[in-house]
Length: 356
Image (tube, rainbow, N blue to C red; front, side, top):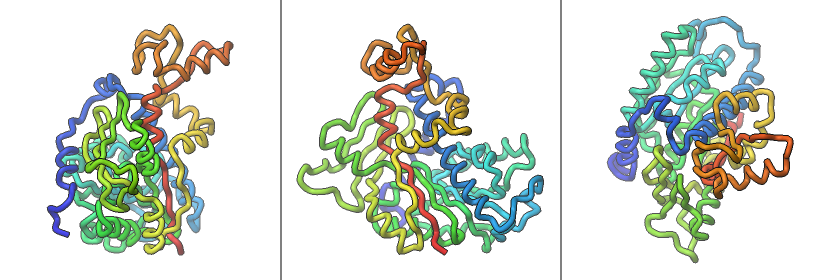
């Protein structure tokens, strides 16, 4: 497949032009709390699988040893991560808190990669003991990443792809290339973890004319047939998420993903919708305080006068009102709007383990 075929160029242009907004501007976003929720959920994923990696190490991590004193190609000494679709580097601090030793970030959008590298350098100045890192601009659905790594012996404990894996399902060749890039340097026993849309849910919502609200919209190109199933590869839809995404994506036919992954030595160990994953972590020792710290929910009561979804007596908060009515001892409750929750539940968490 020629490098200029497909939607990769359009996707790169969209994200290259996407303006980097400051914290104050983000707080004014209609989906401010939803974006915080997604970041919280990624934190839970990172913590979960980082703990699994550390428990699998032959010997305990040597606390206090700087990453550059370790042999990064030695799985007994180092904890390394490859992020495919790293974007602007929004997860760098999450990985720093997981105490990794080295990070490789790759993204199709060169401007985003430059911003990620700048963010890393800024964080490194504040914390000189932060992990080492490399950044590359590449389309991982078409390019062999083996040609990019500085250390030819480097392998990874975790490969992650957050909200980006669906692009590889444009064709079977691209999906195969992506999975090769994931598995070629993934250590035996290592994990491939990610987030993507739930294809079955998207199709069901579109056919029921329920795939659009005030924060998101899904339209298939060409329109989805009511009789025929969508193609396994190249099932393109245009996805709009308020202020964040406005470009084409592809359905990920999950049974096919599992089949292809097995061919590359990956075994499925987790497939859960966001709401299910949230329910597992929201009351944990780490999850509960982080939900509050990251402001993942807005504080709701019937007298609230500035809410993301507008009128506190409107349909966006019916679920919150019902909850407070059934809990008269409570004056307020943390919540998301109905439309934000509908957008969140389009997504699922997945994880594969490389078989030894």
